[in-house]
Length: 216
Ligand code: G3P
Image (cartoon, rainbow, N blue to C red):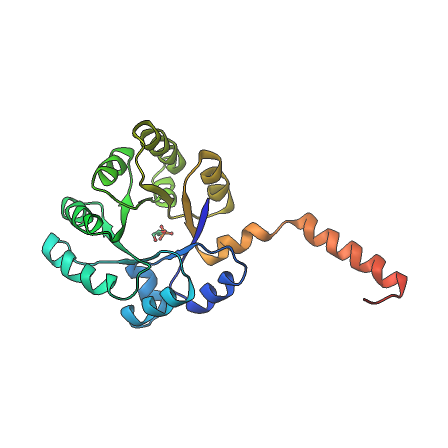
């Protein structure tokens, strides 16, 4: 499973990229707002840090205007994936862009049927939001299973990009189901490294090493 980080914080991206774990980056208008930086400038910087896909989202709602914005975004770098919402205009834009060889991430997906439409429109990635789905009292991961089955039934090449990941269990379940990608905030990716027994083990080893009086 590929690991994307869901942030526009370039310091975090640089630090996580050093672990060799990062396969890509996703951003959205809220994350750009949080970063407090110029949109095009920050996306250009991110695309230079991570060689994998970097999602940058259009904000227009109509097809023509989405295409105009997408043109600006895809010119930033070869590894830009244009992010469009799962609407009729969004999928028209997806169809047009993917036909020209541009990577497209279809976002704000909340059902397996929506994911089926995105795959038929040629999406590179479909982003079902599991956390936001959980928030409404449903099981977000159930949709990931359904999409996996549908995509496998018809050999769709669209990659399932699990988004709105809130905790390590979402990551575990994504991998168990066979999602292609998951995108998580930096804090959740950092949580994956941690285990109390690892910390306790290091403490015990260091205590015993101290007693040997040796150094390396
Ligand atoms: O980037 C899209 C998605 O990951 C947003 O997550 O936590 O705002 O629901 P969240």
